[in-house]
Amino acid sequence: MSLFIQPFFHLLIIALAGWINRDQQAVIDYLIEENRVLKDQLEGRRLRFTDEQRIRLAVKAKAVGRRLLKEIDTLVTPDTLLAWYRKLITRKFDGSKSRRYPGRPRINREIEQLVVRMAKKNTDWGKGDWVILNDSVRGKVIGISPELVQLVERGGAQTTYQTGDFLANSPRNLATNFRIKELFGISYELQQQATKQIPDTLHAFIRDRLEQEGYGEKLLNLRVEFAQANTSSLDLAVIADFEGELGDLYNRLRRAIQRWCVDACSEYGWEIPFPQMTLHGSVARSE
Image: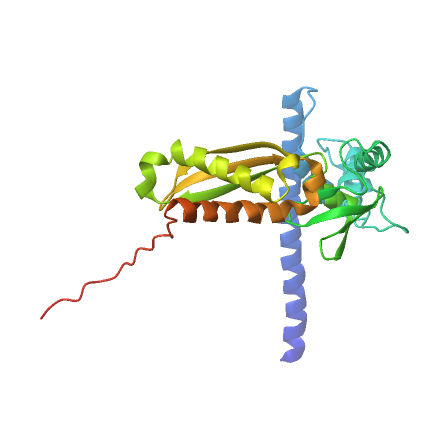
């Protein structure tokens, strides 16, 4: 029985394969003819393909091969299809984008020129200047080159930045004069005095304290003005401009301005509000 069945299955498989091949060939013949009709419709006009379409055609063309492509009436020449494959696929995955070369990566040319110009001319900032960065680091520049910038903070801690990272932090130079702006809130009970009388009084008080503590000669400008009606306070803005020689005392001056505002409130009886907190909860039902 098994001797009879085995040849039968062989014949069945061969017949099935032939039937499938005939169907596949019929589909292929149809698609080739459809391409010819399409080319006739174009009448020599050039087709425009997107890169995605070129990649799709190139992958299939590579699998078919140049010899068989020449037997098919393709929309573009076999040479063009294979050139697309080399350009769009082979180069995409050749590792060139992630390939590392020996030595330190070259600094961006624009950054290099900027740092060299600053180091030579020292027109804006340079070695010895105090700077503040966006990451809140404040320090004195003790080393600068096209590749590295080194800062020393108050207390002696040293921080080194790649030049590109340093410039990306938008360094603000304090050596070329600087501004401090501090907000301070007073109670809504002082509303009638908040826009004129209190700002004028606070201005005179802070200027007097600046003179007393030895900062008056380096003060360039001082303003105190109403800033905004906040949620639980009426905010005043103290704006003070100083010469760059006080750059290393930037944070000390900020704290001093806040301290003088508190002292003024104590002396004149101005109430300092605290943030209001609203509690939400359910009311228990009485039985």
